[in-house]
Image (cartoon, rainbow, N blue to C red; front, side, top):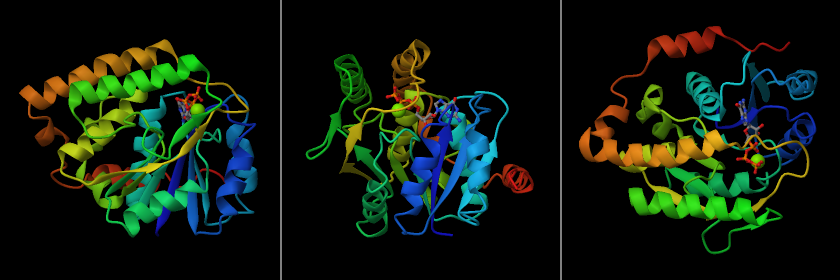
Length: 265
Ligand SMILES: Nc1nc2c(ncn2[C@@H]2O[C@H](COP(=O)(O)OP(=O)(O)OP(=O)(O)O)[C@@H](O)[C@H]2O)c(=O)[nH]1
Ligand SMILES: [Mg+2]
């Protein structure tokens, strides 16, 4: 098992089939796990209908309620580790992330020695297309704020297009990751950096979604602002590194995930 792309979805019926086809059409051996949180628009049903076409490459985990992006990814990471995937990717369903860039993220880890490759809008060669000014300002402001407070050497700390080597996810105690929105993305990078992993930013062009509705809200922004302060505080005073480091594999969780086999058939 080499490469797994984890895609969290909530009401992505207009995007999901297209993004899955785009990934599989790369013919690069990517597997995909969709984590759907009971989307009322039938996103999960579309995935299940596509499963026979992409047998052994397409998987879905369904959760009943909208539990947030961060917990969806953690569920997916545990699923991936239980199946021994070597490279695990985070990607949105809404075509903000170009599927072709999966290969560049993979190369950064597989070939160029990174432990964690981040698809970055704010390094040379990266950028944002079609995003309203206020979203760009929010995103850039969040990046600047995060860097000022944490000193983490990452230009796009809220980026959600990432490739992790398995070792990174195994070393982080995922049950200690606190946040669910933007702050989740920041915390995963912060934890990896604190644990000494090598991060590399790969320039990407990020596009605004053409279809579907954004799930961004004020709570997510608030969590980000307070979350970054909390991370800084904990790393100064409460030994964040020790807390977030896995001491031994969580066998119970791995077994629980294994038993919770693929729902769709
Ligand atoms: N499973 C799950 N997926 C979610 C949840 N919230 C958002 N998503 C998915 O996470 C990805 C990113 O969410 P978006 O709404 O695009 O958020 P964003 O990219 O920060 O904001 P926009 O630029 O407005 O699109 C998409 O694939 C969403 O469908 C959630 O609570 N649960
Ligand atoms: Mg989006």
